Image 1 (cartoon, rainbow, N blue to C red):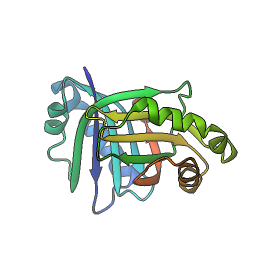
Image 2 (spheres, rainbow, N blue to C red):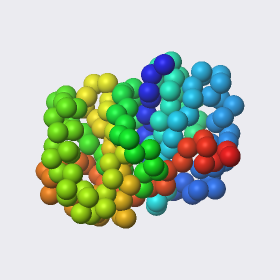
Image 3 (cartoon, helix red, strand yellow):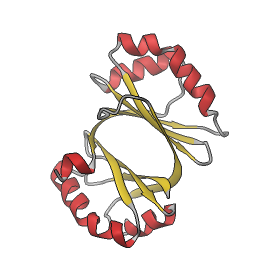
Length: 175
């Protein structure tokens, strides 16, 4: 099974009630495509949703979500790099690279800036790194997105977007 990430944009924006309905409705499809939903991140403004699954391949997730009402969709396989912090993320950092990036190099830069993160009360939780090594989504717990943005700039970490999110897992929706 692969780790598969699906990024979607929504207009009109997706509210929490619609997200819950979508999650509930998709549970029946997961078995059909032999996929397991791991976690989702809904932008606080409802414009973007990132979901992580385990599935046989990316195409399974594409097919499962073909009629989900999103206006933009990206599905990619990758690896998950966890820390010992298994808390819920509140901020997403999106990174795109023109050339394949080195996970070791990025992690070393992040670790070198650990003090900066700590001062701003930012905790790194995990990274989702695309198989082609050109895309990365990093998850943080922080007081706000600006704290993460400022720490990333100070440490010199590349990023495209930083946004506040609500973090959902099957356990905190269906329990």
